[in-house]
Length: 564
Image 1: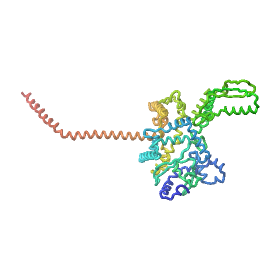
Image 2: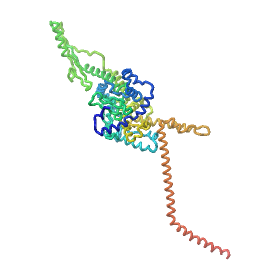
Image 3: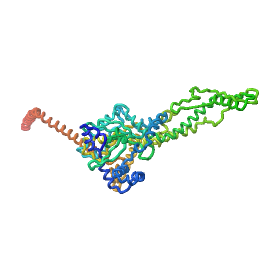
Image 4: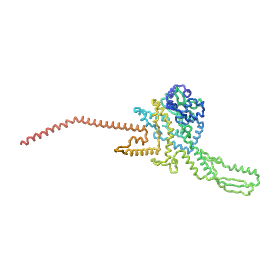
């Protein structure tokens, strides 16, 4: 396979290629089985079969690659969109507008929240205890936490606001791509390199009878052409293949352009109506019509109004000059007149001082952004922070869901290298889908509504379970099982419930151990007391021995008394 490694003859590259090949087909065994067992024609297969024709579709590797698109996540591949590079430049320029930049910052600030350790996310291993054997549980959790720290540092997320910048770029361009860089023995990830997504094309290749996912980079340029395994590439996209907008800001283009047209019309209307216009009618006597036309052309050139409004800078130029004249004089020839006539010209045309239409399109732009209206509220302050989820506006719920969807797409930027680095260290788990599916990325959040909503719902569920638990059947026996009520009404997964049972058992064992320790200490104190008290025993017995004769002596003295 011609590519990156084949043009480098050094031993380090050879060792690296050999090691990466071992993890290049992670997950391919499962996908291969699904494709082989599938009997139907997928949507992507059908579309390409119609476009490519029967001859091209006889290639087994192409058929397999198309089938892979139908069973996995359908990412938007920019290589197949020849207009993407032009769209990307347009979106970058569009994002520089103040209103759009403000919306992007709101969404990015809500999605990427740094704490005092400059972390915006953490790895979530809560589901691991339910899928790993007890003796391996702590080792797996420790390895995942250590791997997360390494990947986070390798991305340089801990040094500056790199993650925030990447997330903004994701909102604007819709696609991000990186190369995963390994050490010389491919035993660990040491860094990442940002790539141009438009240069990458996914493919499938056969190596030793095994299918592997690969990516071609700059396929049509021999000098820059590279072939990289899927384990060397991170590729995330906002859109699905051929469905919907390519980025978050693309749907905002139409509403913003309409709003800008209306704003410009108001600006020009106000400028035009701010000028005082005078009409002067000048008699021309017996001049010929040709001279009239010549004179009128000269007047038209002199008093022609050329207005230009720069959308980027907001500058308005009149006649190519930034200084706006606030008066205009118009001179007209009059053949039969004898005196000069001067009068003011009334402003005509529609009245554009009404701002209702402008407000309509501004609200439409806000609505399409998905951001709650109170985030734009400048008249009543910057909005009110509430800790109570009850009665919260529906748009806050929709906004929280939007943030979760964006995070779900963005999290692969750190999730994929974590799993790859973990399997390099623990190769026995490379095909364990249960562990992979129970690893999560937990983003920091300052959305108090989301947190308070979860707590209030949980409290209501607990109150409901408590009432049902007290419901009695015949013989004053509980009608409902507590475990059944918990599994039925509390929104906990099976792994979370299993983790809770293990924690309870661990706490019970710890409590029993502490009780045994306290009991042992008490027994030890008693034993210690007897040991030290052994020396005092004769002192206690000595008075008893001394008292015994004293008690017998009076008895001996009293005995003869009755005889007297």
